[in-house]
Structure formats: C-alpha cells, structure tokens
Amino acid sequence: MSARESPLLRKIATVLSLSEAERAFVRDLEKSRRPVSARTDLVKQGERYDRVGILQAGWAIRYKTLSDGRRHVINFLLPGDVFGVFLQLFEIPDHSIAMLTDGTLATFETPQLVEAFRDHPRVAAAFTWFAAREESIIAERATSLGRRTALERMAHIVLELYRRLEAVELAGNGSFELPVTQEILADTLGLSLVHANRTLRKLREIGLVDIEGKTILLQNIRALKVVADFDDLFLYIRKMPESVQQQFIEASG
Amino acid sequence: MSARESPLLRKIATVLSLSEAERAFVRDLEKSRRPVSARTDLVKQGERYDRVGILQAGWAIRYKTLSDGRRHVINFLLPGDVFGVFLQLFEIPDHSIAMLTDGTLATFETPQLVEAFRDHPRVAAAFTWFAAREESIIAERATSLGRRTALERMAHIVLELYRRLEAVELAGNGSFELPVTQEILADTLGLSLVHANRTLRKLREIGLVDIEGKTILLQNIRALKVVADFDDLFLYIRKMPESVQQQFIEASG
DNA sequence: CTGCCTTCATAACAAATGTTAAAGAGCCGG
DNA sequence: CCGGCTCTTTAACATTTGTTATGAAGGCAG
Image 1 (cartoon, each protein chain N blue to C red):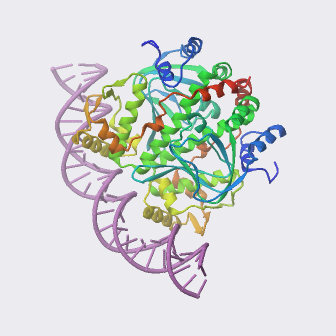
Image 2 (image 1 turned 60 degrees about the horizontal axis):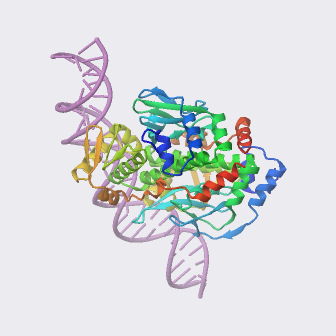
C-alpha cells in the first residue's frame, strides 16, 4: 500500500486486503474529486440526496437541528469516511452533513454502488463494514451521552478520534490536528459551550492532554482510557474474518 | 396480509410488498420459534455470536455496560425486530441484548442470510432498510440525550415507541403496553431512576399521558409532539421507492 | 394468607451542568 | 496596522439533575 493511496484505501487496508483490480475500482469511485469549503452543507436534512460521498480531505459533521435551533452533532466524518450509502435507501435524509474545514470530496452515483455490490463483493464488504461501524460508533456515543460524565465523555471522544485518525495516518505519537471549535465539541458531547471549555481545561490541568492551537497532544493515553472507560471494541479496527468476506462473494452470486 | 402474519411480515408490509414466494422464504427464516424468558441474554457483549434473530413476541433491549456497572440502553427491540445482521460481520458484539419480558424468538444461520441476499433481493432490501433505520433511531436518541431535556426525551420516546408498535399492530387508539420499568427508561434516557419518575409524573400532571399498570395512554399526542419536537422522518415508516428495490434486484445479479 | 422482593413514589439535600456576561486572543481583510 | 470577526476563557449565579433515604404498593412463592 503506497503512502499516496487515498485515505479510503488506507482505511480499507486495515480491514481487508483488496486485489489491484479492486483497488482500481475504488480509485474509480473516487476520481471525481473537487474542493469543498468549510461550512458547506453536503447533505441537508429533509432534502433529497442521491449520491454517495467519500471525504478525501478535511473534516465534516453529521448533525441534526431541533426546531428551536439546538444542534446535536451525531458524528464526525474524517478523511476516508464514506457517507450516503444508507441515504441511498431512504432518499430523504433525517440529518445534515456539513464541512467543518475546507476539504476535498469525491462522489459517485447509485449505479456504481449497485455495481460494487454486484461485481466487487470485497469492496461491498468493506463498505458494509464501515456502515455497520458507523452505527456502533453512534451507539457508543449515545452511551457516553447517557451515562458518562462530561470529563469522561471528553476523554472518550479524544481517544476515539485518535484511533480513527491513526487508521488513515493522520494521527500518531499521541497527537493529531483537531480542527474543531469547542462549540462543535459541546454539540457532540451534549454540553454547553462553557462546560465544554471547563472540561477541556480540567483535562489539561490533570495532565491528560495538552492543546496548542489546533493540535492536541494525548499526554497520558493510559490514564485517558481509565477515565473514559475506553474499550476500542466498538471501532472494529481489525481484519474482517475470511469467512465473512466469503459470504459477500457468495451473496453476489 | 392476514392478521396472523408474523410481526416481521407485518412490518415488512409497511415498507414494501413481497410476493407469496418471498413471504414463504421469510416464514421459513422464522420457523425455529422458541420461548425465551425475561432477563435472558440473547447476545453478550464481547462473546462471539453468529446467528440472526427475529423477535416474535415480547420486548428486549440492546444495552452496554460500563466497567463500573453503569448501564445504557441503546434501543428497544420490539416484536418483528431483527438483530444480528451486522453482528454477523463483526462476530464479536460490542453490546448485549437481553429479554425484558418473556417472549418468543426465532433465529437462523448465516448461510440463510447469504441466501436471502443472493436469491431474494426484496427480502434483502427489507432487512437492509431495517438495519439502516436502526441507525437512524439510535442517532435520534443520541440527539435526545445530547440536546433534549428530561421531559422532552420522555415525550419523545413515548411517541417513538407508539409509532413503532403501530407498525406491528401492537398500539392504537393512543395507547400501548409498556412492559418496562422506570429504571430501564432511565437507562435509556440517560436519567437517574428518581428523575425518570419525576419526569413521568410531570408528563401525567400536565395531562399528556396517563399510566395504568403497564398500559400507557397518550392523552394528547399533538402536545406530546410539540414538547418532544417529534418529527417521525427518522422512523422511515413509508414505502421503499421502487427504484431502490430495483437496485437490490440488479445488485443480486 | 403472609412475607419477601421488586417497583414506584416522594422528600431533602448535593452535585453537575447551564446561563449570562464580559474580556482577551487570534486571525483576516482592507 | 486597524477594526471587526470568531473563538476561547473565566466568573457568578441559576437550574437541572443526581443521590440518599424511606415508605407504600403490588405481585409472587411458600
């Protein structure tokens, strides 16, 4: 796997090994790259959407807005993340997706998704794996929102992002770029802006993280894990069993 | 559709129309019915699981436990709900599933799931739809946990359960059986038991619901919707577009 | 029928988190 | 380099929610 592979291909490589032909197919799905600027809505709650997107660079959020303006960030989309596979089914999304930073986006159309599932079962397997993982990430966050304290939630999401970014080689040595305002963090963790700030300060005071500009440094990952009660099982960062890959091949007939 | 169809077939009928042959295939998936009693764990966090389950009767919960015992209920499983489609991929579940009441369970094995995707694309489409919907339900709940007050959350879940039970003909005329302790509700809504109780009392005091034993009566659905800021889009209780069904048929080759 | 055991209900008090306000830091365009 | 943004930080205070404790109600096993 070359260092210049797309983030999606890097991410897929952590889960299963594609043939060169399969990689070429994925590259083809990604070939429509275009720049998108911060604050652009890629998908709008309630408005028909019929493409699949692959984020190449930059961060985005999936979010919902209540009618009085309160916002909840469902999840972060990082480079290599795919969106819209399920939206294809529903056509009308129940949430929005917005760029947080400037970035690069590739999109492809439904027929190509169908083609993937018919002709490239291992690519389909990877897409399905990531869609399933998306759910487990959201479920873990719901657990944080329901049962972790503010400090625990903050520690948890820092670790989650670190692990996810590692897979696309955007994190290492305990640090990564976090191009996210505290307001976004607050809307993700179910906190007020002020309390998100307090919580971050506390994480710094007790020596678990250090923040310099947009860079966050995890100073004590072990302690962070204890505070967050972090178990990375929900991220499913491991190889897909051969038997499961085989099932996709059989299912595609 | 006869009144004696399984809840799953009733639920599927709200989304798409199956042929008699397809219904027969689903009935075959469900034929292994067996009774399960309350508190039985159907799936255990961290322990390999390799079947697909279809709940025929009774309620269950998907939940996670933190290492100090705090519990979060991710979602309710109601009659007609399917679990384990994604667990097939991961093999090791990151959450548990437990029966809340006595009930009836059918399970089938991976090869039959593969067969569904290869030979019965419209059945596969329905399964995929429900799996995707599961995610949107969890995302909506995360939104509640993050940004709705206790009262709003309680109103919201009551409406959600009402709409989901309607689809399997277990709710109507504004009321349904809610075989759930307040502790379970608390663990679902991220509240303490005491506060869940307070919140329920308030919902009664302001005349939005009435509770008699295990039966809940929604006295003012319109007001409940306003309080909860409830928009049922996330439940996707409508017909799957023909074009999407067609894509499953094409994908199965 | 009786006596657990679970569930519900409520009160008093504690703690976590939200709100409002204000000021400083950092960045960008003119 | 200035002015106006957005973002961060902090303080003081308000509110929601959690905790602990206790009793009542209801169902079930003996």
